[in-house]
Length: 398
Image (cartoon, rainbow, N blue to C red; front, top):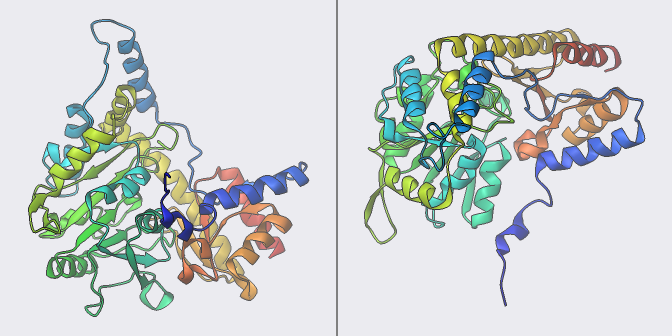
């Protein structure tokens, strides 16, 4: 008999955003006359930057000529994109080696796949509330999971607790779903904890491009010795609107070395390279040329304009909530607003209220963990027209 993975029995019946989609689709089918405004899933709405489109078009043309046609590329990404990312990191004070960078089809994939190089015997430390992928991928492996509570008292930024011992730590800053950001001093405390416990930090920096304050780290590698204990996962989905074209990258420093259960020391960079060359065929050449253009001078200018658009949406949302007297977090250095559900409603009660009464879709905080109950996430990635209209509905009807 072919036995299947028993750990899947411990997962919720469906992924959070699939559950939301089912509810929204049912509502739309029953109310086709309603204009539904979606502020839930963090999908972008602006088109790709002109510099990116131009680069992709040139790459498409190359693929149609024998002399410039490309077949299989390197699983870890082309050198030209590595060089562009090295230069990008240097812009905020981080020096990377080219072969410490691995190009992927997005941070979500890497967040799930990176667990391949770790033993299932590890104890996992996960913030709550949290992006569901961190939790679900470790449940699938049957690992022991402990939680660190994010709450108003710590501004939804859990800090190390020496009484809690963990081997792998998930951190996300700017945070999804709360929008909270760690300071350099706070990240220094996490690095110290990881080094003390021989732990590894999996640092999700998917939203780093939203950070405006130069004092707030855009990479954990601005912290001394972070190379000895951290892996950084990044994405172009929000930085440059690549949700539909799929490109991200993960940084695994050479200095990061840990032991196997049998006591053999291994460099995690080589382990990840071995995993990727075995299980991944690389990101298409055309997409990587588009990604390279993101990091060009013109591409950065155009992408900053896109980010400014979404930041203005967040400001509009924040102002509307302030006028209603609704307590919230995020919206600064982040595309997400994390609000306290009004009138004592639970997360899913507020979801149903917004959908059924206002035809506005958000994300219930309970879907991000127990500490998310009573909270709700709104995304700033919509159009300007829809953002304004949604806030008008909320201000008028709530």
